Amino acid sequence: MVNKQKYVVITGGLGYIGSHTVIELLENNYNKIIIIDNLSNSSKKILKSIKEISKKEIVFFKKDLRDKSIFNIFKKYKIDCVIHFAGLKSINESEKKFKLYFNNNVMGSLNLFQAMDKYDCRKIIFSSSANVYDQYTKAPFKESNPIRPSSKYGLTKVMIEKFLRMYSERYNKKWSVVILRYFNPIGAHCSGLLKENINKAENIIPKITKVLINKNKKFFIWGNNYETKDGTCLRDYIHVSDVAKFHLKSFKILKRKNFEILNIGTGKPHSVIDILKAFKKITKKNIPIKIGKKRPGDVAINYADVNKSKKIFKNIKYRSLTTMIKDVTNAINI
Picture 1 (tube, rainbow, N blue to C red):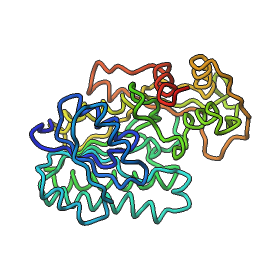
Picture 2: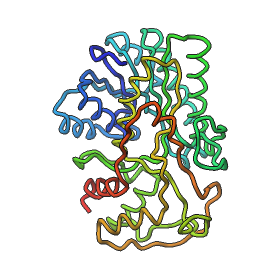
Picture 3: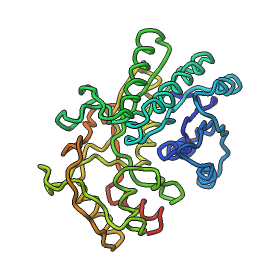
């Protein structure tokens, strides 16, 4: 269990999932929070929103994890645990700029781990991705499934995972590591004050919302002849606030486990058409679509096996797809 008398560091804490996790911790009386964020994927406006929702103060440092000055943070504060979100996350960009992604995601993480180890902070929850799996393995994906990332972004996640496993299991058993592999977080905070940045995100929800607010004319469906119920791809969507809850729940694992990997999804896939229908039902607006050819690398069905998570956490409750979409439309005032 994480010590409430010491600080929890959240890297990338002003990002989409990070900011929701900060709120989750504050609402459960983890009031000693330090956010480290270089603002490459976020904004200080998010810090203002977090304070408005929580009515609490937070220690914030604008720093890049590659900067050796982060050692001073661990020297100054009594830190018990790190939740590590920080990293570049564009799959498309990672294919073109792998050196940048390697330096930022992998080398930044190694610098963080060195700072943690030097100042006796050896508990970490790492934000990984379902992108690490071999996408051509038959769904649902289990934590024991083959690892074969489909992008350079996924490769950086694998590198960090492997280092944490090797280090905690072979070289320093004082470390406690939980790796959470997210499937498709969507939604927004129920206040409407925290949401995904639709100008930077690449996934389905921002693309649909861009059509709804007239930034784009049509929503593209890449392939409608997959072997699924309606011909479109099936994916596992989970509310971002539910993802945040899993980080809080993972504190209990840190107490009794040296190393653990868990899928974070609902285990129930929804199609592209399901998502579009939900938006139309809630907004009462038509969403013009255009059917394109299948994209290389896209698979028909991709969702999580969540049996391990259910066994460990018990009594897990997920927000519905309708709630996920309602929170999105509330946050962007549709």
